[in-house]
Amino acid sequence: MNKLQTLPYLLIVDDLHSVFLEALEENEIPYDYRPLIKKEEALAIVGKYDGLIIRSKFKVDATFIDSAPQLKIIGRVGAGVDNIDEAYAENRGIKLLSAPEGNCDAVGEHMVGMLLTLLNKLTIANSQVRSGLWLREENRGIELGGKTVGLIGYGNNGQAMARKLAGFGVEVLAYDKYKTGFTDQFATEVELEALFLRADILSLHIPLTSETRNLVNQRFLRKFQKPIFFLNGSRGEIVDVEAVIDGLERKLILGAGLDVLAIEKFPALNDTTWYQKLISFPNVVLSPHVAGWSVQSYFKLSKVLADKLISFIRSNYSK
Image (cartoon, rainbow, N blue to C red; front, side, top):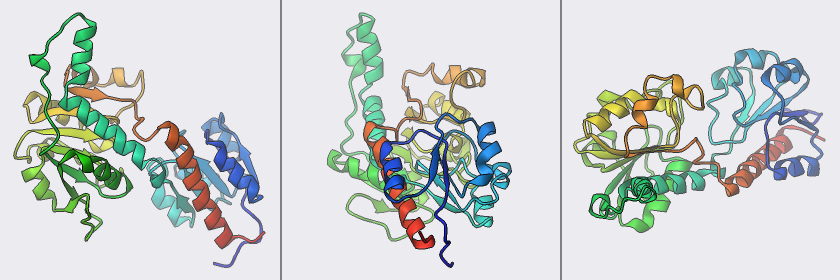
């Protein structure tokens, strides 16, 4: 495309690290920083902007995009773009940018932490000691060494997880429907059937798409040839929570570490049919969708997206 003559005017609707704003100012890119703005307010003004920068505040659906006829760029300070109607935006010729490189190490460390917590019964033991119980035999742990870890998805997050596991003496197998030839020093590429046959631990590292929604259901979990520890730090809607509960009840799942859920936040969680049952299992560890949200990733996500945005603007706009 021919270079556009005016630098894009950006609307930023979420809290970002100052490194992002500093990059815009250094490159003389005009912006409005409105981290407290609500969707209704953004709808009323977005029509005058060329770019939108968002984290997870609201869904950027077709209605929102239609309210912004000048929009040329949507940048998400996060790993994916599942809160954006990707197909509609691309059909409109809008460039989508995200920053999966910025929080992959945080996700990898968080999920390894969840796994070690499950294997060593740390939440159970912690609760017991605080309650005056000193039960050693009941809290005998399981060593990670010698286990086979199966990863579904070998993008930035999957690769980070494999790197974090490198020192534990495990075999890492990875399946990725959209990649081939990616075997490296940290993981071996396999077909999905190999995970069903060999995995002791399953960890998800895939985006939410029409193909992956409810991928992990009862039929999927019953294909594993031995009980597994199950981890999900990707997107909650990929997993049927009722199927996980069924797997826990049938001992098909030995423990589950879930940073994400199909329904999140309160009071919505209390209104589900499955939340109270899920938290009744002592071998379930939960966190509030924070695997990728470390102190360091707060900086790195903004820095990565700023670099991509500046590069795109330099290629497509003239001062």
